View 1 (tube, helix red, strand yellow):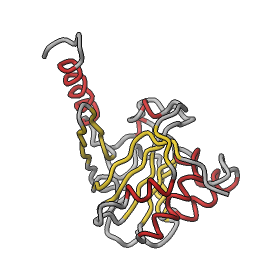
View 2 (tube, rainbow, N blue to C red):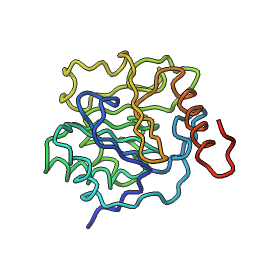
View 3 (tube, rainbow, N blue to C red):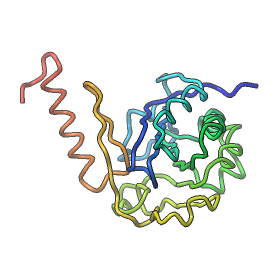
View 4 (cartoon, rainbow, N blue to C red):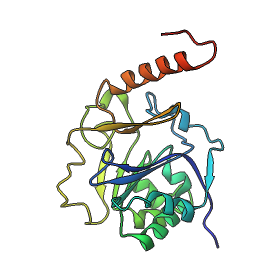
Amino acid sequence: MNAPALNVAASHVGTEALGPGVRSVVWVQGCPFHCAGCISPDWIPDRPARNVQPAELAAELLADPRVSGLTLSGGEPMGQAAGLAELVRVAREIRDVSVICFTGHRLERLRVRPPSPGVPALLTAVDVLVDGLYVAALNDGRGLRGSSNQRIHHLTSRLADCGYDFGQGPRTAEIAVSGPEALLIGVPPKGLLNAFDTAVDAVRARTTPGGTPQ
């Protein structure tokens, strides 16, 4: 049986802002949690975005030979776990990549009551899982998680001794610009998200018909 196509909000090839080494990132569309202050509110609604087969996406994400890992985010990856598990399987036939995955679900719940049929397969494929809901009041500006209640689980030993501080290391972020679109990549340091939104609004005002010149 073929894995389902993925409904992808965005993807990016080659970043150093979401884990160790050079990584490619997939953000899936749709999330059931609606966390207040979510960095990606446009990716919460369960609506059609880019429909793509896992094998096609895997080839895109590994087109850059420097890429040594994949980071899965969203949206909520566990809602499309079967497609993401197939993405990782195909990607690892091309290159032995590490895999980091973010989820609002707790790991214990995923193991006992998986929200979709592909969750066990995806957990088997993931090296590092960042779990828990985002809580804006607990955003301490540290590590590869949005707030301090979120936990880092090394599900394999692949990245356990790589020297990257998942929990308390300094945050970095990148901005990728493609035509009129700008994509913020990473878990942003405090203050960066507001500055990014202000800059995007200013650019849109200059380029949108009827917008107020700046």
